[in-house]
Length: 430
Length: 81
Image (cartoon, rainbow over all chains, first blue to last red):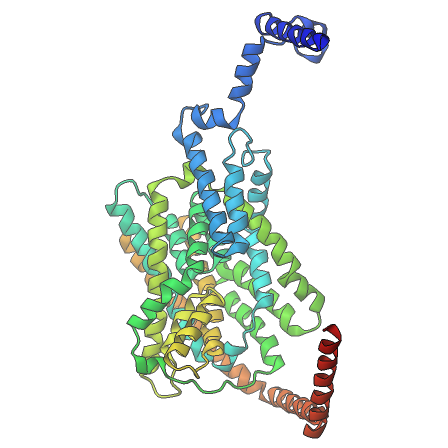
């Protein structure tokens, strides 16, 4: 016991000695590049400066966005994780985005700075436009265009729902003009408007081309509102329809042949080639995925595109988007504006689809239940499920799901076409 | 800039409607052109569906199978007690 006490006090004396006297031991190791090790007090002080806690409280460049702002962003990352895990809001995307947001805001780690892993994920996958397109290919391999081919006029509902994109674009320009602190140019407004397309990969692709600095806010708004489709859409659908309209039964769909399904992706691509080559990346990859599914001779490739590849790219797309959620880019009034405009975009898109269905019913021919119009905003298959649910609320024996899938998949093509139109802005600007 | 936005809206909606409108026409045309192939598919589909129905056991057999399954389940439950 006496021996232990002696050793303990001895160690304390040595430690005190080290805190007061700079060591010369380093001189012997001059070859290794260290001349001397500082005093213990200085070493502890330097170590504290290299901790995250110190950087949150005393940021190196005295900017609040580099200090407490990062802490707030870590909180937002945790909030996204909570929404994904507990509330099941688009968990496949919000888990990687939320975690990416936490990683990118770790002070001094520099994960999104040149050389950091998130920097490479963003530049290789998102800035280049590769990840959204690969995801689009996977979605193409998952999509069955049968319901749209069986009742082609429902494709017009998918066109009408894109009105939300363009009205939101005007809304963004109006906000920019009348709200101090918000300065959206035409590129920014176009990128914000595409949230109304309710199509994550399209929104990320367009934002990465036109307004990379808004990418994080736009992706979060797009996926959050897509998750909120069952809450946002029903009141608007009820507002614009009468109980009798909600009870309209649509006639049984015809059988769609295999050859028709194979010819379809090639027809869409042909249209894209002649009308809108700027949409070719999105539509091309989408239709390539769909051709792999329908041709029936590359089942392995189709399965890979819709499962393994889609999952792998989703992980990195989410992390890359999360990497763009730095405090400096996210914690400003523009983000609030984007979240506000995103809600407007979804609402107008929903209303336009429903109203288009009502207009179509004014013409002779088979009647369309206006509830399927809201599915034109993409958000596959959530929007179609909402149509089905509201239809069954009005008439428990009315099954609208397959009818709603028509405008739903047409909405994906519609939002890709709208993105193609908005991409031509870049050519106009030179 | 708001005027630019309005112009873009007009152009954008016109292109989206033209694209999907033309697509509707193309779908109708291809459905008409490929009708013989679709009809062949329908015939093959119906043939397979009929075969499936005919290969199902007749209702008397079904009752026998149900009785065998029920007896097995009862025996298993009795054995566990």
